[in-house]
Length: 375
Image 1: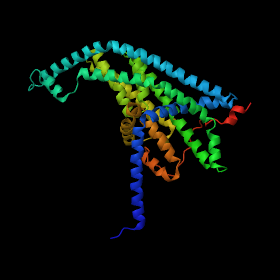
Image 2: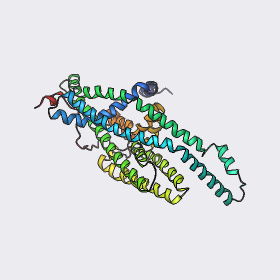
Image 3: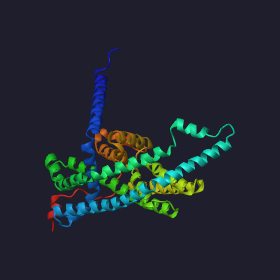
Image 4: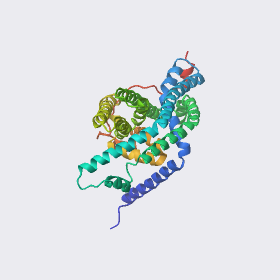
């Protein structure tokens, strides 16, 4: 049987698209040293655009608006860096004490398990744990030290990110005129680009505010329960809140482990800590955030997991942290591309008709040079 020529064309097109996707993914992985700082700078620039647009609309010169926007971003990150460095220093000093508490907790639980299970002999649990290579305090705290080292190296790239951000914000002021020159009198392309930018800005702005509120509440809850490093735990909750569902679970693990070590294995206190995490993330993640964003900016849980694995493989831990924002940006771009909108529907949390439209809340669009000359 000879296949229909049109079916052959469709099959060939899918093969070509698959090969192109492989090349793109390999390029993203290979160009990580260049693309990762640029993506971070673009991420921060989108968050700074409301300040830049507001200043330009009030007649502030473009260079001064960029300087003020950059100063605000640098000031915020300096505050976070100061809090993080102080917490990291205290954590490094306290690691030996926590390691001793961890080993004592393991010994107590080992004795309890062996005494409650008649078929176990003394030492059986330790032997089993060693064979499975799990619950090793040395590995746990070695991982903590490696994480601190990676965080320090990431801070070292901050200057490059800020430098790229300066040029991105400066370019944002003239970008609309470039689009108009490219598309001529037809404004479809420019309007589509503005729609994408506004929706991305909406998502990142709301997500950042919700994550900040989550971190503050979690930090306060840990402080009320007497946990050490409540500020650091709040910052971890803030950062990992960008990853729905999975991030909140990962953020709660250090707090629960710390609770067990400090209280000598009190399950009641650990459950109280975990319950606070569950309540806070449920309220913010299932009620407040969806009501602010609308259901069109949701991702299915499967897509969240796959994006975490994909971007973590492509760009490492920072890619995993930015996995959902990056996937959301791709989804927003697909929604505003007519022939690729069906892919955005596959990524969505719910099944919606392709023609369904929801008007997002008004956000600050890209500033234009004409804004800066208006008196």
